[in-house]
Length: 246
Image (cartoon, rainbow, N blue to C red):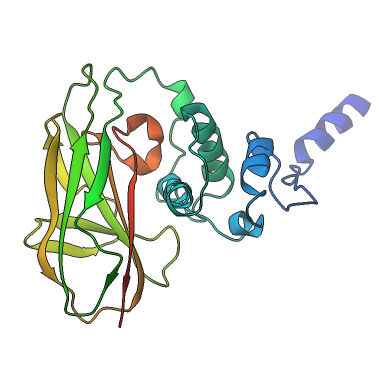
């Protein structure tokens, strides 16, 4: 009888809540010490605990801090540990899929993994309403072993929108479509070559909300979603910030 009672108690015992660091408020989990050491030295932990976002959102924030705030570049392993922690513990509050994606460390090595370099060209820091934008994306430095086709993703974060909400570009550079919040690629099945792709061509700014717009672009394996992990990406994440207003 005592054994039966003990087993019953174990079965109905509540699952322990997440352990929180009393000093920072961060969730204590794999990668926590690295995030605390790397991130909290420059800003408050609230910049993490009060927000949530996809892996791409957090990667975009890191890239922005490295570009504009003097944050040092991370090696691949350090970046992966930080993103794993942020995505796992401070990911989107509502998932868009029924089950979690398979962690990248459980997947076999990707034979097509490459380190292409991409960057926006043509964008200025400031625009006024009715100005014209012409934006290109330069893709270079594909390793000699890189092969296979890839998809080009382009998205924009609008002023005063949640960090994990993006407008994904579709259509063509001359006739772009900005209406979709659903993750989708801009150009598909592109060849692995150094080239320049037009993102916006002679696009006249309509009467949009003024403020800060953040352009993102990344290359991913064909038919793969880069928001689900870095092991399917084929380039760095290009980030360009512009301000629209008087």
